[in-house]
Length: 445
Image (tube, rainbow, N blue to C red; front, side, top):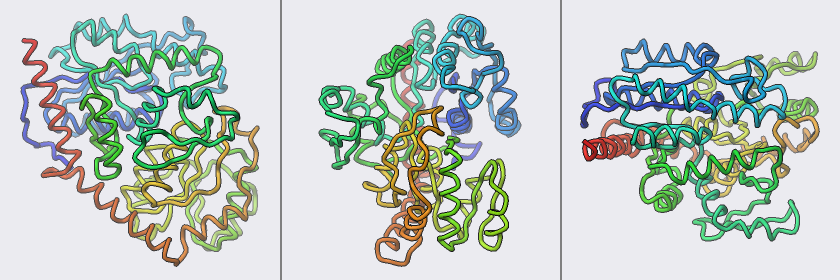
């Protein structure tokens, strides 16, 4: 990893970061802030008061390390957007009906942010914004500075979306939501159903307009930062970089909470019990008796657990993940084979990458997509026998299992090399990013 004393190879720069208000977005953006600040870049993070307080420990650790990082607040316009008071983070929404108001509120901050930036010293050199905050394009244009989009997604997923957004007739011609199709002109032959693909086609209630604004702002941005590394998905990094005229910087791994219905949680727990394998399960609650029955080989942690620390322990032989990109990267970086249980969003894309392309995981058998906020409606997708079978396949002693473990270990080693100070691909990409923005700033002076 780059040290705080990494040599500065550019004139002083000031990056303003706009993380989206969700845990899976906020923490990677703070990690990016640290990486940039370690290179001598002045960093300002713009967020809301509640999120500043909620992630205070994360922010404080970065600031107290002596890095040039500052956090400023803007108030979320609840009433104007039709959002209940206090709902400042995606995790806090009680109902899917608040999704559109939340995204609207998050993108009604142009005026207060403009005032904030007018008074900032030194003058901002570049904005780094979540894909979910298209209003920041107007801010960048007002200050005549580049805006770079941060995607918390794999290049595999980003290339999928890029290809299909330019070939929407493929989705439109499908006869049903269960029909599979291949992504055209793709490095690997990978199949999806329409619901498994994170492209909005028939959403209602204002969501399509919001997504269209995000896509337009993304397409007109100066470039993209991705939380991946070249050695993990080289063909997809190259293809996506070509699609974005070379302005893609893969700087990961920089160091999502998903909900299963209670009925499915019970089947998952019973399957783990039947597998006779030792396990750690982080869970919010459970029925009486289960913890007592598995106490000799199962550790239940109620609430939060240090996932990265646990995964890095040499005794861990597998990781059940919903395939959010942050958790996927944590598993890969730790060199651990993955048992995939996607729910929605980009998670099915990531599962295809894990199982079919990288070959470091086993699917639990999930094909049906869950709608956010409707977890209980979908019920049981995999019974306890299915869970047991998947665990046995992942943890077995056969040739396929041994090859998965070998590949997982190899990718974990490559991930660590990518962020090394000398010669690491992600470390080098940060240097290239800073050189690019520095040259752009000098050309405007």
